[in-house]
Each structure stands twice: as C-alpha cells, then as structure tokens.
Image 1 (cartoon, helix red, strand yellow):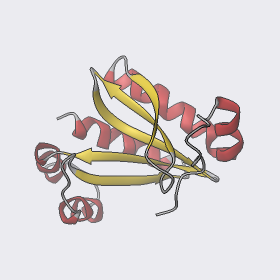
Image 2 (tube, one colour; image 1 turned 90 degrees about the vertical axis):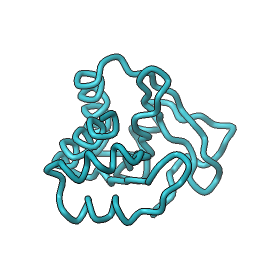
Image 3 (cartoon, one colour; image 1 turned 120 degrees about the horizontal axis):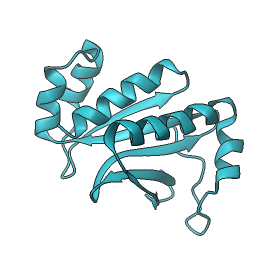
Image 4 (tube, one colour; image 1 turned 30 degrees about the vertical axis):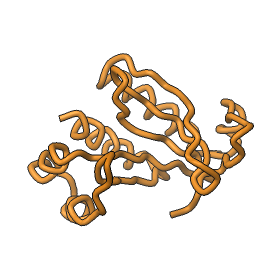
Length: 138
C-alpha cells in the first residue's frame, strides 16, 4: 500500500495542495465527496493524521461515526473503511464483486473493524466507494 502524500504532522493539506497532488483525479475527489453528502446526508469533514507512515486523510463522519477516510496520493486517492461484523455480513449479501467480498472476509480484524481499501483512479471506482459507504452504515 502506497503511503499518503502528506506525511508532515505540522502541515494540514489545503485544497490547492490536494488538487496538485491528485492532478486529473481531483475532479473524482470532489465528485465523491459531493455524492457521499447527497447519499448519506450532512457529513462532517475533518483532516486526521495517522502517523508518518500513512499521513493525513480526510475523515467523513456521520453523527460522530467515521464513514470513510480519503487519503491523497500522487495521481489518485485511497478510500478506506473499517467494517464491523455487521457490515461484513451486509457485504456478503450485497452485489459487490466476489473478489472484494473475499478480501473483506479475509482481512485481519482490528478493534475498529476490518480494513477495506479502494484506490480511486477512475470514475468507475466512485460507485464502488458509494456502495461500501452504504454497507458500512448498515
């Protein structure tokens, strides 16, 4: 897994820096954030630092519950989720790709849940991230 671009704790990324890092995928970043707000309601957004190895991520939360973390990387961004047992069960019953369901089921379970990560490089990944966000809140 490639680390995020912004790994200095003292420097919270601003919109111009994110746009420069993402390049052509900045439009996808903006579209995904808007789609998540439309689908899930009023989400809170806050930058969170996860240490030098991972750097800064934009956390989108619903009623203080983390839904997804968006991590800018050079030319793309990563959408990361922590799936509870209930969300894993919902994923099994969903129309997600079989390979992704297998990855979710086999992921190591942490206190926060099982990690689910999607690299967003193309528009086609947006629908997948939206499905995962909906499943996360199941």
